Image (cartoon, rainbow, N blue to C red; front, side, top):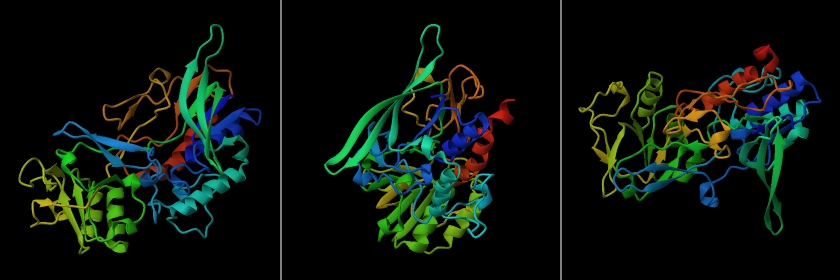
Length: 395
């Protein structure tokens, strides 16, 4: 192949469309997608639920007391029930095919998924997309006197009456585009004494429905847009006994959301988690200690120093995670906690030219993986469109 693209979400779809449009139909291109249909993170149809799948992604946090790894339930497909975009539909569509005028201004995730599927059909991209092809390893092969190529190993799953069949396959490509985004592995910060906690631990990516939290006390760690959105859903549509939102780092935009949450009778907004005691009590930071610059109007006052939640939900962002790339294959590097990337590409030239092999990451990059999922995903539609226009960028 001339170009191999990993991922059939918004980034992979627009790259495939633009490459074929710019370089012509003779460009030999393949898009590898691990799910049963296109859509990327917007695809909830085949979501992996941790309780049903022992091999589902899990994130770990290092317990500072016991020095052990604590498992936290997570999912690689983080879009949850009743989720709507928080940017206008014009920013969640590609420039050449806008949403229908009848679609609401902030469309639900199901509408976004239908849009992506129709976009693929509109441009006839089905022929170059391979579904149920999970990429497990990518490596460069060098032969003396010849151009380098990428060797891409995949596992293709097929559901049979007797069970699931796994078939391994190998693809070769001159160029590789990684379009899987960075919302696949949840980031969980270190919490002192977390091994003492005996309740349910999960990342916001594993959150699905408010019905799962009936009569429970839920502690949401993280007061960003995702944390506030989930807290609001639990407060208005769930039947939780109580919802506690713990906020460590304050930003101006959070003031509106946190003050609105405080108006709910069952919601308490507290400072960051300090530690968990041996009895499982969760203690919060003392407002009289440290340099707390948070707007004090966001917090509930006159609350006890600790809580005993049934569930701790970490709305704390994501790690950059590309396990299929061997270290020697990529010139990009991640920070110590995998929440940022430096040097996103190797030397780049148009895919329709006779260039050496390269690796390129296409997604909406931010300085922190803790930024809001939907804000980034919405901007991604516009930015990957710009990134995908090779001729304009590279001439």
